[in-house]
Image 1 (cartoon, rainbow, N blue to C red):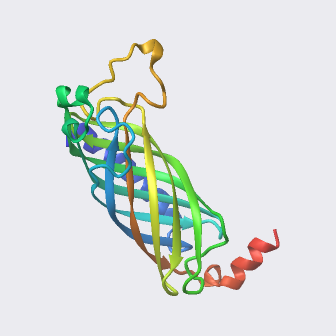
Image 2 (image 1 turned 90 degrees about the horizontal axis):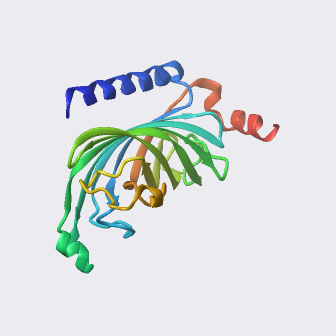
Length: 229
């Protein structure tokens, strides 16, 4: 990774650390993540879970209440693609390929469709949606970093008083078309904001540990705050 990119990463990590430190030991979840990552772009136009490769990382959640959560995460994933994997004659003649990694740093807001807290009873769960902003530190055809818009859906469930498990499928909308080293040769007048930039996706499982803090961690306390509003 280039020195400049590393400096940017340190700045972002420090910023997240300030946010985390300010509210730590209140209603926080710390977790680890494992799953897969894949690419969508000029080589793979639309095939979901194509050439799925590894993705690892960690996350921090600050639970505002049983409906709303702010989350910071850092994921590291591998991205692979090859024109020869597709029957399209144009792609086979073009013979482009992609092999590299992405470091994904995001801050996201989660909305739980059902009231949920990680200190609830074992088996309690909720589905949720998430969205936010972040950076992708790319090491593929080039080494660079780009702004991304992350969003996704998931489900999380209590395994016990302090532990939780989650399953999430997330997408990263990029503002960049050279992750695969190939820029779509469409006239700028006809380029689409949605379709002419590369994407990547991360899906997997997280295990989280609840950090407790007094009355805030009593289910009756949260129920009283939520349902009396």
